[in-house]
Structures are given as C-alpha cells and as structure tokens.
Image 1: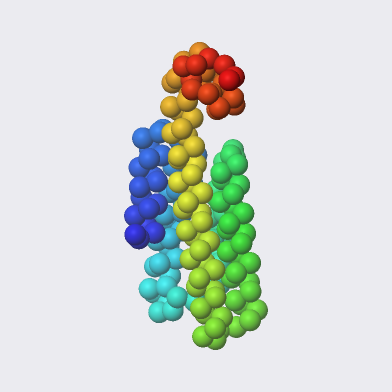
Image 2: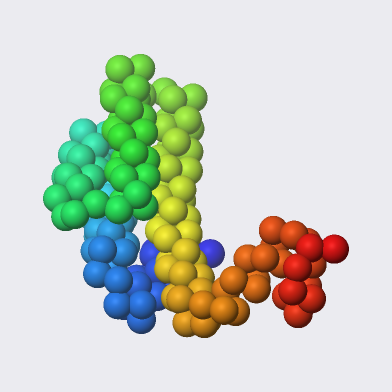
Length: 157
C-alpha cells in the first residue's frame, strides 16, 4: 500500500466526517509527502536532510497553528522525532549505514503519523455511532460491559 494513497483515503474520510481539523492535518501530511518527494526527485538524492527538515519544520508549525486536539499534538510530536532524525543524520554524516537508519527513521515516523490520523478518524466514527445510540441503550451497553452480562439481562449475575 502506498503512503500517499493512505493519506488520500484519510483525507476523504475527514471530508465525509466534516472534520476540518483532521482534513487540515491529513492535507498537510499529504502536501509534506509531495514536497519531500519532489525535493528528492529534483536534488537527485533521497538524503537532502536540510531541505526535508525545513519542510517538516514548517509542516509541524502549520499543524500547530490551529486550535489543537490531542491527535494533532501526537502528529506534531512525531514531527519532532523526524526533526531529531534530520539533525542526527546531519551530525553523523552520510554513509551507507546512516543512510539506511535515516531513511527508515523517516519512513516509520511518516507511517506513524498516518496511522495516528487514521486512528483519529476511527475514533470520530465510533463517537458518532455512540452518540446516535439512545441514552438508555448506552446505559445498558455500559452496564453489560461493566458487569459482564448481556445487555438484555439488566444487571449483575
């Protein structure tokens, strides 16, 4: 599965949920991926740490410039992790070993960001479904989960 296709799907879910913050964050992640891919293509190297670090920094700043949710803070923390990876690569210098670790650090960080936003979407869908269930039904479900009985039995065993 391609990273950009996952982000595009998340962006579509955010649009369907009418969640502007999630759409903003997913759109920024998609734009970040596109810009960094373009940088790698134009520069001829996948290890242009200065330009990619600058793009990551500005993407994190744009995510943080709107009223925050815990999901956006998690994505921004993952950007901080990626900025540390950029700095570590710059400090160590290019070599086959550091190239390998740098590339995988960025790849895992990017996938973690995508899954955080996907989890955000799943959470919003579950909350929407939960809110559509009537209050009495929610109480029976909560009681069943707490006491370990079926929702139709009405109480502890």
